[in-house]
Amino acid sequence: MQPVKKSYFALGTLINLTVFAPATVADIEAAYRLIQHYEDLLTVNRPQSEVMTINHAAGQHAVQVSTLTYQLVKTAVKVSQQALGFNAAIGPLVKLWHIGFSDARKPSPEAITAKLALVDPQQIELNDQQQSVWLRQPGMELDLGAIAKGYIADAIRALWHQCGVAEGIIDLGGNILLVGQQQWRVGIQSPQQQRGHMILRLTTGAAAVVTSGIYERHLQIDGHDYHHMFDSQTGYPIANNLASVTIIAPDSLTADIWTTIAFYQGLNSTKLIAQQPNLAAIYVTKNQQIYLTAGLRAKVELLDTTYQLKHKNQHND
Image 1 (cartoon, rainbow, N blue to C red):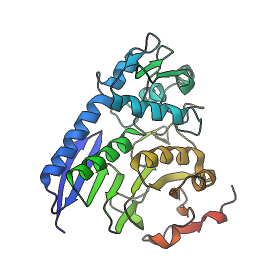
Image 2 (cartoon, rainbow, N blue to C red):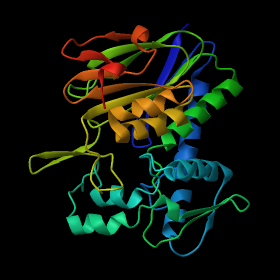
Image 3 (tube, rainbow, N blue to C red):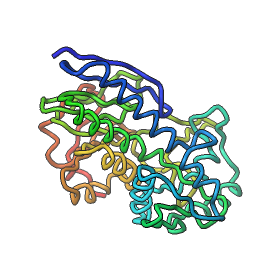
């Protein structure tokens, strides 16, 4: 099968879309138009979008939105209210630090404390009949950055299925969704080396393979390195020994959610992962150890021997 590939910049990242003949470049271009449409609705990095309309009305009134936006917000809020570490109300902290942007900074403790009062997902009211969202407190902000790419990747897969695309690769900046029945090989990026240096190779059938790590966006200041994934209890980046977490799941939305939860919970999250159907995880620690959840050992190949493969039961947390 001959691959057809195109690259774009959208969703704040490099996007690579690949299909295999008889699919054509038209199928890729249709996927890119879909990405643009979803980004127009969901982004918080522009003054206007449906999500920004919700944010602008915080503390004032509910905002009615499209079905597409409402379903994603509803999913994000419901998961957030479980208090497992995923928090769609994290927007005020993200904007305060602004890591990954030219004006990134380490805020004062007072500024962080002030924002902590605004990141409570219990203060989000959903109305299914109206398809409306109300942020009850002024200053609250939704940020769907930890879930939107997964939602969009799944939508591209659905579009391709409708178009008859049998095989393809959706790569939304490290959020990978593999379409088709063949066996795929996916490299897991080293958190400590330049892009393209893989420490592990995973062999899998059709699946989402999503990685969150401390190496993509970070801020170095006063001898400290601050990454972009925040703890809504402290207002600071999540503090543990993990450098990255990769989730393998049947769909990209689920994988997106669980990378955040697993990163927040650390290696203890293996217990939670085990309770979820068809979910697996690869944890890479800062001291170059790799932990795998059950069933993955036969599917991975270690490529960098400076790392050490561990089994789940070797960790006693």
